[in-house]
Length: 94
Image (tube, rainbow, N blue to C red; front, side):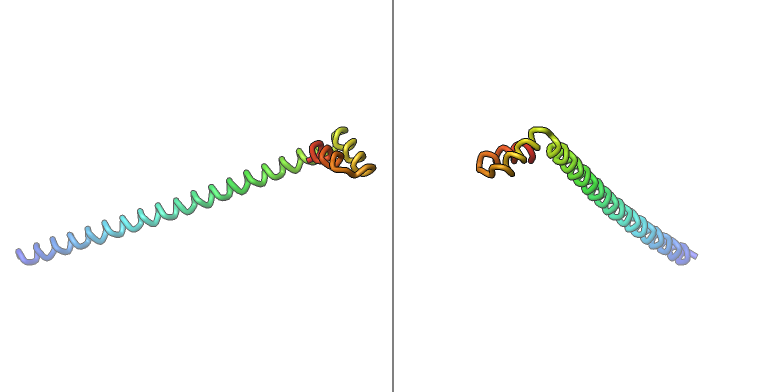
């Protein structure tokens, strides 16, 4: 009888150890998956931010191209290409 109790106790200890190991593995897997998801989310957000900034820069450049100053210096450069008119056009339009 005592041997059966000892055997049952050993079996229970082994079962608890296996359950503990399984629990730790599941927790580690969850943390790893959560970290990977967070990294992907950060990458998506960074990419979206970069796209928004690029679009904003493009829109601002388009607006600068439509300003009277840019149009003036662009015309001056086309009529009289020189270092000065090129610089003024670049300053007004870029």
